[in-house]
Amino acid sequence: MSKTQVSHNRSLPKATTGIAGLDEVTGGGLPRGRPTLVSGRAGCGKTLFAVEFLVRGATQLGEPGVFLAFEETAEELAQNVRSLGFDLEDLVARKKLLIDYVHVERSEIEETGEYDLEGLFIRLGQAIDSIGAKRVVLDTIESLFGGFANSAVLRSELRRLFRWLKDKKVTAVITGERGDGTLTRHGLEEYVSDCVIVLDHRVTEQLSTRRLRIVKYRGTVHGTNEYPFLIDEDGISVLPITSLGLRHEASEERISTGVPRLDAMLGGAGLYRGSSVLISGTAGTGKTSLAAHFADATCRRNERCLYFAFEESESQLVRNMRSIGLDLMPWLKKGVLRLHATRPTAYGLETHLAALHKLVSEFEPRAVVVDPITNFLKSGTQAEAESMLVRLIDFLKARQTTALFASLTYGGSVQEQSEVGISSVIDTWLLLRDIELGGERNRAMYILKSRGMAHSNQIREFLLTNHGVELRDVYVGPEGVLTGSMRMAQEAREQAASLSRQEEIERRQRHLEHKRRALDAGITLQRAQFAAEEEELKLIIAQDRAAAGRLAEGRQKLARSRKADEPAGVARNGARRMAIRGGRK
Image 1: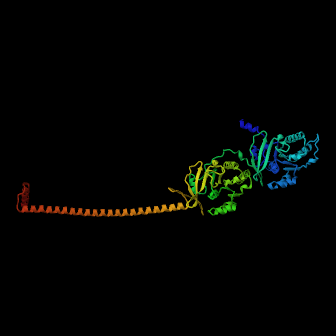
Image 2: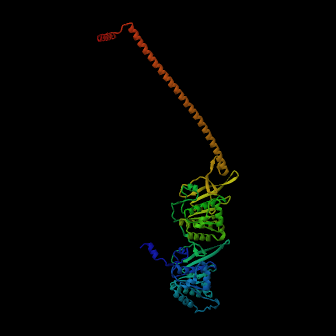
Image 3: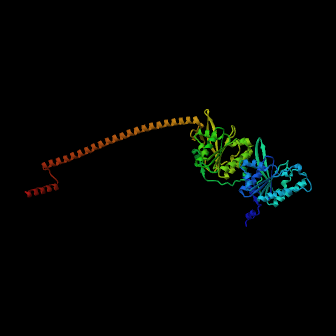
């Protein structure tokens, strides 16, 4: 058997709570068959925690539960948790839950040497046996032991209570109020509990945040950080992403930004799926417009996109994007786009993070837009905002969700630096900036970095038109980088100069063509003259030969007429011809 199997077999048995995120933090749930102390001040959510522990066990895990209340009646408790979607009356009717209210009056408690909790044990034991309960809640323990002044008796009775619960083999949650400098008012319960969970509801600069921390957990490893948690219409959800590491997968798939020219700048294929993108720039540079293009491109692929807007309402964002040719309303109606608009000062950073985590888990988007992240600085310090965003990026990367963050750069700040200090963990960083030339301001964009691809290092003019975002080449020359009307004026001058050069070239081409034609005509004429002269020469030669032939023939005739001596051969031939002629006669 391997060491892993041995460790697993020897691990502490745990009871799943069913509370979102808590089982991950505790490594599987609360210790099964042992008591757990849930401590906190008033209003931190102790009772809701205990109720949800019972409800999830009864509805999801088939484990009935008993709720022993010392402060609220069954009717009051059922009414208080109905807003969370918990129907306690139905669970009671189906024998999955039993609520027992025990009224304890401190003035009636008389401390004697014979005082004990036998009556409580009998009552609780009957309740457990009546429905076969596996889970028990005691809310709160201060009401039960409020009349004890003798710490020795108190400690003894606490030990008896916790031992009795262990002997009954029920998984118990006992709530307790925090004291001054102690986890509970008596300062004893945390020492006899096997697991201690502290709930905290703190307010910093008028912003409230709920946090959970596991102070003690015997027999097992557990998360030791403070974890934010939410209480909403679905109950309690704990955000355990502080424990995530760099173990996410890196995708090779590329997706479009929604701007074709920008895709070309990003290695010709756009962004990597599951990567993180930062768009930074001063106010009015077009960050939201570019983010809306990304959201629109995601929806066009029939993928879900979750858009967190912290400066504009849903209707305002939809209206503003229509001015640049983007209509987001069809995607909202189709359900592939969800806009979540809220003020960053609505609650603290950790609550924001928990809300983001919850919405992403529910909607399961392939892309998330957060616009802008610099507003989180209003809900905490820069270090806190940076920590929160790093955890959010890790959470989204682990889900292979592409994340786009817009960041406002304030005037006078270093533009190659993000206000919240997360540029080092960002995969692709796009910088939008204003260029002031010729009495006007124009937008420009360039890519500061994009991991894993050969991206462009060129500056592009960033235009917002009635048909969307356009990227155009800027003029780079002796006068520097020109944009806007100066770029158009320079382009007009260059076009005029180009036209002038073209006209000059065409004029020279016409002149050269004229000379070529004249040269061809001269060559043709000379060839004709040469042919005429050649023909004339041939005629003269022929005439001269003919004249020479006639002259020779005339001389021969004259010689014959004068009977001139002929060469011997010629005379014999002549005599032979005469003889032949004579014979014929």
